[in-house]
Image (tube, rainbow, N blue to C red; front, side, top):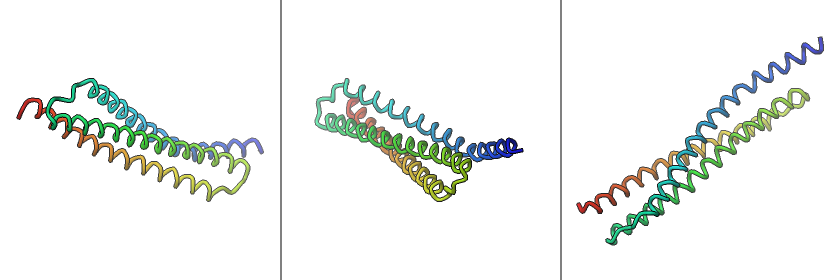
Length: 154
C-alpha cells in the first residue's frame, strides 16, 4: 500500500510539472527566434562592412548610422536571449523544487511562487527587448532605403 501512495504522489507531481514544461517549450521557441534574429544581424553587419561606404558625406553618414544600429540590435538581442534563458532556468528550478518539496514534505510555497514570479518577470523583460529590437530593425530598413536612394541618385 505504501508503494501505491508513492506512485500516486509521483504521478501527481508529474502532472504539476507538465504546465511548466509547456512554458519551457514556449520559451525555447522564443529563444530560437531570437537566435535567428541575432544571426541575421551579424550577417548583415558583415555584409555591410564588406561594402564601401560611398563617396558623399550623406552616404558615409548613413553607412555609419546603419552599422551603429546593427551593433545596438546585437546588444539588445543578446540581452533578450540572456533574459529568456534565465527565465527558463528559473522555471526548471521551480519544477525541481516542486518535486523535492512534495517528496520531502517541505513547505516551499513562497520560494516556489517567488521563483515563478521572477521567471515571468525575466520573460516579460526579454519580450519587451524583443519588441524593441523589432523597432530597431524597422529603423534600419529606413536607413537602408535612404542609402539605396542616395546610390541611385534620387
